[in-house]
Image (cartoon, rainbow over all chains, first blue to last red; front, top):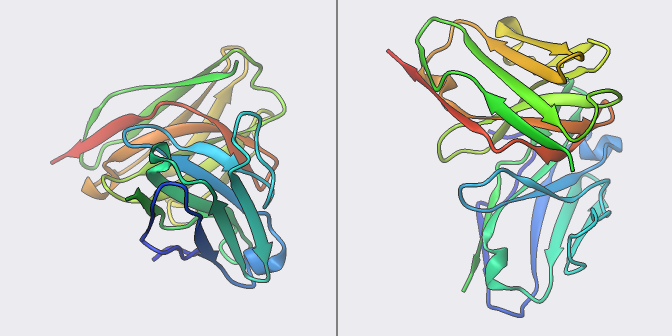
Amino acid sequence: QSVLTQPPSVSGAPGQRVTISCTGSSSNIGAGYDVHWYQQLPGTAPKLLIYGNNNRPSGVPDRFSGSKSGTSASLAITGLQAEDEADYYCQSYDSSVSAVVFGGGTKLTVL
Amino acid sequence: QVQLQESGPGLVKASETLSLTCTVSGGSISSYYWSWIRQSPGKGLEWIGYIYYSGSTKYNPSLKSRVTISVDTSKNQFSLKLSSVTAADTAVYYCARGRGNRPNFDYWGQGTLVTVSS
């Protein structure tokens, strides 16, 4: 059971917009700790996609965006492409366990 | 371009100690928090702990009693030791560079699969 809750799977057709939610609590996202997002393509290491809630590292397309409100955060992907098919993880810090925490991951399928 | 590379045995016997080293190239190990993160087969990511280049550490409470992370700045390396391993410790182990003491991870190693055998 992950501290941060993500839907196990989402799907969308090419060109569509999808969102992935990340629900936390008052000891992590709700406490003001930043949320970060990672993309993990099959058989590869995770890649930082969004940091500090809504910032994209250099080289990440602006089709990817992040937001945070209250005890939740979201990753939005617009103009869905086949190459976006991957697992996505949110990550934050939790003060009650005093540890870095990850969501359980969401598998994105491009139909 | 910063690169991280994990090294160590791919097979460890149950009850023994898992030992891995991460070598950092293309940049200094100074001024960052260096983490170990693992992923059990078909599962999600689990943070194990980090070490600051100065040597201060922070561990996941769920693993704290079995984990030691150390750093060798002269070699630009940091290491993981996980004692008393069981089959539940079978996973791909990643090393990663963290920014800040509540970090995000901007550079990752390719990962190394460690299997615990009985």
